[in-house]
Image (tube, rainbow, N blue to C red):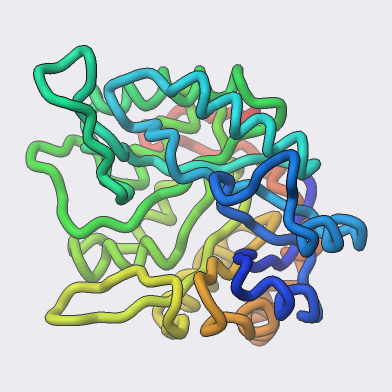
Length: 297
């Protein structure tokens, strides 16, 4: 996969400011918020300038027990084509339950809910990811999410879960370092351990975002300043692999200075030089079980 560079999350509320920002190579847009036949003028102007646009889906529910909805997959594919996207992204989450195959009416959570890190759940997720890959015209990358709780009886760490997902499906990974920090605060998980277990050659790009802590719980708001702890996780990741891209996942004006800060921080660490030139084609590495792993598709 080719280099993306430094990007920012595009929202209608900050569209004009994003257009004026220096150093933006690409933008990420919530897929469900754009209509293929009526793209916002701001996105059209960015594309004309050579700025790539990546649709970021939030509604497939790849971690749910049901297979992905054909209509939602078609809609995501249409947006990828309309935007000329190099890839599309979604979340490792479930977002709905109930429905015709159950005794309950369909319920939309309105939130990204964590998938249990069990082998049964991994089997379902892998099957759903393969269906999505077949339906989409460009590569798919999936994102680790922030969670407020852990499921009982989990069998895998986050790094192991993501490793096996990429191993079995060839899917790329959107690594959200802010979510690794969230899970450190809320679930006591070690970000460095997660990074050490990841299939680094599968990284498509990186999310960086802010949040806030209240009563001992970290909330991934995407609207608050990015803490040094998150930038530290980013620097740790960049010391292990040169990610093809990094994006400030902003929901408002609070993070408009983030692209420049990403470059500055990684530059100070001596890590951004290679980031701007490399792709995610990396040497084969050993899996946690000692097996050599081929680069993903």
